[in-house]
Image 1: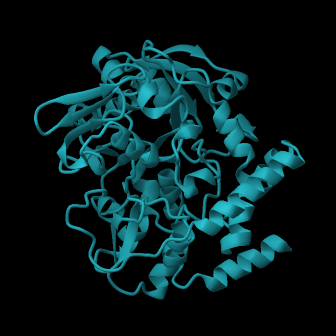
Image 2 (image 1 turned 30 degrees about the vertical axis):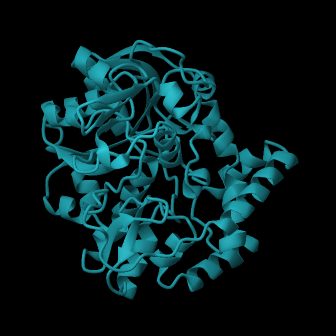
Length: 430
């Protein structure tokens, strides 16, 4: 009854819904709302904490607002499996066709890209075999290197220009309507919330399923903007003098590398710059309550194949792969047969949980955290409530209550005001 009443309250009170989502701290900045509304109504720009947010240039029409409500991953992550025939549907990890560890066969790809170059190798194979015409992903923004911009890569060289993890804010779907209008088959690489937005849109726009041939994501630790700002302040680095920024790569995990306008550079071991684990990144509120940081709605998910803590030194590049759908399974197998990807070994669920134990803890705490958002802000996201509640209840009353209480406090403190007008011209966080 509580959930039903909260849902009714949410549906009645969100006018316009996109504004309520932003005000309640549930916007992740994917940009799909701006794509749907168009640049005369919404554009993406910096929010109060520097994260990507929609700016309102005009009133959002009710029909447009209804569409945004239906697709926004801030309030809708249904966790429907891309392929219900998956042989395993694990309560914690979702649909699974295969879990394996491997690496990009090409030595440069394995070294330059993150982990073992798994995502880069998969997308290169898709392009080289003409399975898709292009790949939508993000890369470093040239005019603003701390930000990321959406890129359409048509060949392997362009893929490598965007290789490597980007831990900051990004809006890869800010012009997704224009991308669909190209009418060309393509693949999408994005955060789990970006993929959720694409899946949501597929329910109302048939072009998505017709054109998007594969979705690729990763086990997501959240947006590490706060940690980045802390380290830049600590190292006394003038942001206006940064001409290049690489979070990781050029090794596994690889150093964080910063180029400066005077021609000098700074380089830091990954663990020193980002800390021992993602739980210390100071991630945004929306990331803390994310119901799907494990990318259940993607066809393929990549992850780091190491233990709980960041390695002290460098490791041979290695990527973990989760094939969640038949399409993902086939794409991974084809890349393996054609020697774009080499598979070292198959992994078990227990091994996956040991490597990514922080994801287990986060997911076990998701349901009480989302309930806190509903109680405090009146927004009840649509997701796999029964399964998430079972995971949470299994942690015990004390842990459940601690998660509920902590999120309730944070939800009360998290209130944003949606910006109005044209975003700053130097904003390049598409």
